[in-house]
Amino acid sequence: MADSNLQMTPVTREQIDAILPFLPRLEEEGFVAGEWKGRPGQFPWFQFSDETKEFLNAVNLQDWVSPQCRWTEWQDTAKTFIDTPSNIETADAQTIRRLFTTHVRANRFCEGHLAAMFESGHMLLLLKRLKTIRTGMGEL
Image 1: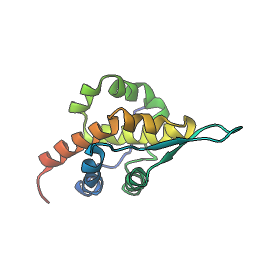
Image 2: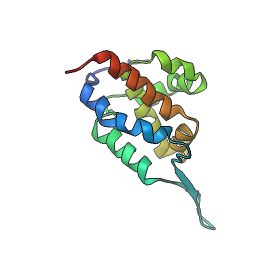
Image 3: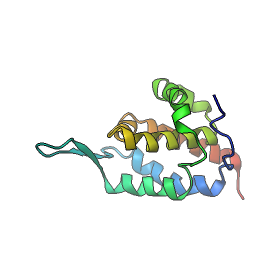
């Protein structure tokens, strides 16, 4: 299998700083990523909350969803981080970028995938890990 991190640019402090303000929002009691919608005769769909839309917009604008990541080749590895959340404690910034990429892209093919990642706390854990990584980077 090819390296799914091939040719990805390094993650910068600015990229991390752009999405860390969402951490307290995801930590708030009662945070919901959105809700399922549906009409008779249609497949149900997940409608993201405004906060979730803002977060996803920031993730996309800040290159956390990387076109260089071969996410389809990395789905099995991503599953290990979902199934064993403690793996996130040692993830580096590029791994988190690959996870964001995988989840955002997978949601296009599997409605509700991203909702499940928010509801399970997986996205919150990724942001907490980024906060730890950012703390270790120091100031500019």
